[in-house]
Length: 315
Image (tube, rainbow, N blue to C red; front, top):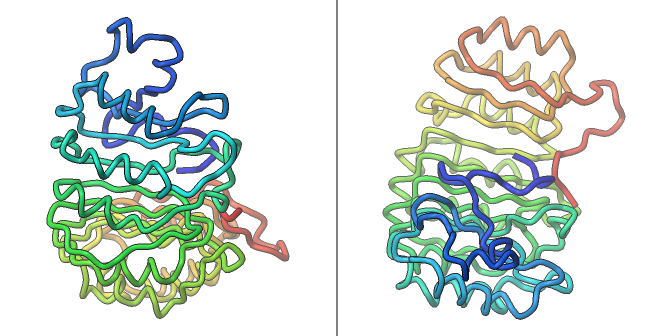
């Protein structure tokens, strides 16, 4: 998962760009896919006319949205990043009754060429959860001004926040949410320079096993203190019930990987994702030998002897 390219699949469905269809006049020609066959991407280009609200309304008026199960939100601005709350959030939540079958929502399928992730101005995204009580998957990209209030949501099974700097208030709010069905949680923690001010203590509720009884996949990623996270994970009670663990995209070194190997057994894992790391060849070999039946992603290795270790996504 990167921010270099637009996603091509979401919630098990191919992404169909409604904006491109509008430009090609396919919407008027009646050649759109079946409502349930794709994840519908709705957004603007820099040369689009009108507002996101107008584009969203055209989507509602053109597609049988009562049957749409997945939506991807692209750019909601044309002349540079604007706050998500100004137009787009109200348009989406205000039409929740038109999307009774919606199960998956991705907000911010925006590449770095369109806007740096740190420039995406977000808001309180809690209304997305309260407006769609049957939503099972939510992905939000962008951490600037991002807010979340603790909520109870009975249906949500997958939650991911992608940020170059995830505010500690959001991390704490996620930990305070009541999400009894949550199976997958991924947090891109980012760096302090871009608002990523969570500490290891703030991650304790995700590690001690007291939250989210259905959790089977945990991602604590894109962190400057990835070694400390790995050391904490090595003894975290939650690991015993996970099927997959993601500690990728950060500054993981031999120190953190060594802590993982010296901690509790990880042989029960199906997947261990460590891509974008700073591990020596020797440590990579140790991991493979210790976990022969685990699918380990060790792609994207950086220079273990370099002076700086960078996260994958920051600015």
